[in-house]
Length: 107
Image 1 (cartoon, rainbow, N blue to C red):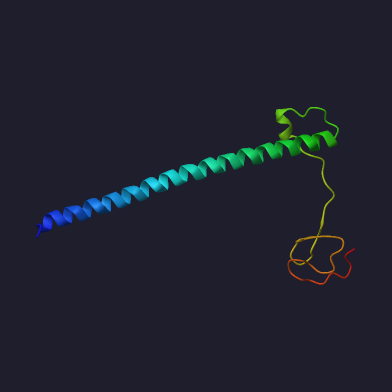
Image 2: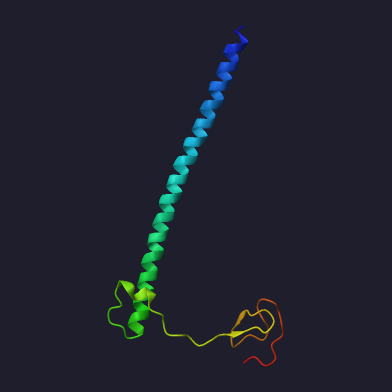
């Protein structure tokens, strides 16, 4: 039978290997998730830029340029809101979709 010190050493080395493997797995997984997140953010940025250009075109601005995102867009008409919870309401709502308040004068 091997001495206790050798058994303890083998157990410690095994635990270190398991922890090291988990750490490497975590680091690699985090890097992959960050790369996917970065790709998603780039796609969202591209989509938002396309929307910005479409809004500028519809507003009659020929070339908004890179600083156009700081330009305020024309104000939209205010939405009606629920008098109880301030949730936005559609003209067809007969009750608030959030709190259920019956809307009698809403049209």
